[in-house]
Amino acid sequence: MARLPLAIASIPLLASLATAQWSENFDSYAVNSQVVNQGGWEEWGPGAGAFVSNVQSRSPGNSIAIAGPSDLVHQYLGYTTGKWVYRTWQYIPSTMTGATYFILLSEYAYPAGPYNWNVQVEFSIANGVKGNFGRGVIGHNTVPLVTNAWVEIKVLIDLDQDWTQFYYDGVLLDEPLVLDHPTLGGGYQWSRGVFGGNTNVNWMNIAAVDLYANNATAVYYDDMSLHAAQFEVFGTGCGGAMPAPSFTLVLPPVSGQPYLHQINNLPLNACIHAFGFGNQTSLLGPLPLHLTAYGAPNCYLRINPESTIFLMGTQNSASFVLNLPPGLQGLKFYVQAAGLDPTANSLGLTVSPMAAVWVQ
Image (tube, rainbow, N blue to C red; front, side, top):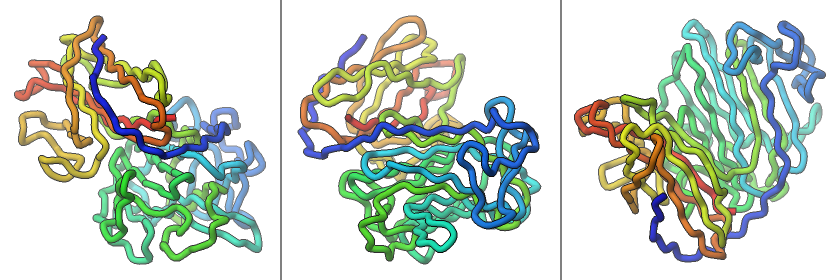
């Protein structure tokens, strides 16, 4: 086990983490049943429900099909402080027509309102992935749509610092005309909503998810969850003799205590471990950075490596330990690892996804 002698200045960011957790995989419902009135699901208006499907599923054996008139809602209570991750997996067939939407709201009061939209992202074959991230006019680069595969959608919601970030397939969709948060980086204010004009302080809340078909053909969602932010993995890695290196959290990130995670799938029991506070730019350029030019096709650098260390382990794994000083509650940092594997590519490295870590 290797230890990293890294000193981090105390940052007085206090986190108020609630304990409520929610998840949904649609597997307890009958195939082809209307999900409205099951598991807390409801429709935004008559006839706007959705049907449980086994045509596609990420976890056996069901998902939810959002198609045609579907405008499916699930409400939440008690999410008014803390740092949260809303996560779902989406499958869009290459034959899809129309535009479908993933939406989160901080106010939902059917039928008369008020409503407040805080995440609103459109998905279509024609236009790719487009979201209003704090502005009425979409200024971020259009992201190509991934079809015929399950793709992760992950939304980070920091209600303590009034900030949110939307990740599609591990990549932050950042609006360049919205100023970055001084410590959290790209994103936009949660409370000001998707268009950036709201000023109601009561909107510091996670109230509902809305899966809106907008008369498009079927799009599928599975393995949905809303949970406290602690250790989250983003994007994909690249493998070689073994699958891509992966992380296992062993000791959670608690201020004043040792933090430990394990890096797996290391053919030579060794890796280069990177630590940093940013995931948008690096000395090599914007992130994520494709490493094909460096001899590692299908591999990406996803963090700005402000500190690196060589780790040795056993049984195809190694461990990273960091003694967290007191007073670091709310600190966020990123990690990534590159495993030594001379058979993988000309660079001789396999690369893990990125992980974000929040100190509790």
